[in-house]
Amino acid sequence: MSNFKHSLSFSPDDPFLKGFQEVVFSVSDFERSIDFFQKVCGWKLLNLETDREGLGKLWQLEESAKVKEALLYNEGDVEGFLRIVKFEGVKQERIRSGAHAWDSGGIFDINIRTPDMDSFYREFLDEGWNGYSDPLRYTFGMYDVSEVLMKGPDGITIATMQRFAPPLEGFPHMKKSSRIFNSSLICKDMEITRDFFLNKLGFEMFFQTPGLDRKAGHNVLGIPQNLNKDVTVPVDIVRPDINNYGSIEYLELKELKGKDCSVHAKPPHLGILMLRFPVKDAESYASRLKDHGIELESGIQLLDLPPYGKVKIFAVRTPDGAWLEFMEPLT
Image (cartoon, rainbow, N blue to C red; front, side):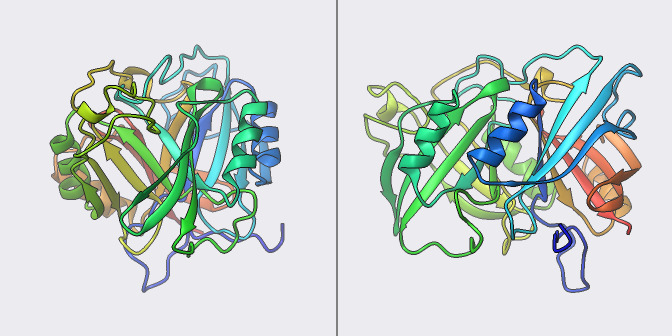
């Protein structure tokens, strides 16, 4: 691990805020989760903490809570990591229990790439995961891709894509799978969510579609095939720095009204728990957010966060309850 690198640190030319550095999963079976991502995704285990301290105040945990965690990464990549946490001594619910793709609240999925969809999909199935649908090959604009959404333990959903054309760039270290490069949210009100990310958080628009002219039939979201043509699915993809990955995609399924999963979208509940973004100056960014009417879910804390060292870190929640953390490296 001596050659391990990460992109949490900032140089003078770096943007003030970067795309997310890592995603945090809260799981019910710690060892099974670690084994799965090593075996199926081909990721490496960097470090394992069996008695994690310092998180209680940041995550508003009961004193009885114990936390252990593991960090996994795609070898060669410096971002898009996965941190797996296991809580003990607390009551937990699943964040998106029994949820469909049209149910809002929390974090819906993470996105990774693979060079071989057929074998990758089969490995997920063999490990007990299930698709919202089977993989779908389709074209949009100049892109020819195959995509599938898979749901696994604790309600965690992973979206996987294979690019056939044009040749994929920006993923030189992909073997069985890539780093995590995007995460999706289901929102109740597109305009409110767009205002939150663009005008309050200061993200930039990377991609936008009104989601019109859909056809009946097979679709990745698992919408009944006869209804797919009647459902509008507007999608935005936003990034803190438009030139880098670690983006957030939010979508609204306007004609399908589901339940709201936001109530449990916070520690210590189970599922995709949060996204963590590097920021140059936590104090000034937190001040900006408060000036824009955003209430901090957790105020700025000092935390020792391996492998980055000491950080200043704070949390906010989106209009649909997704937990986001912003961290400034100090060492």
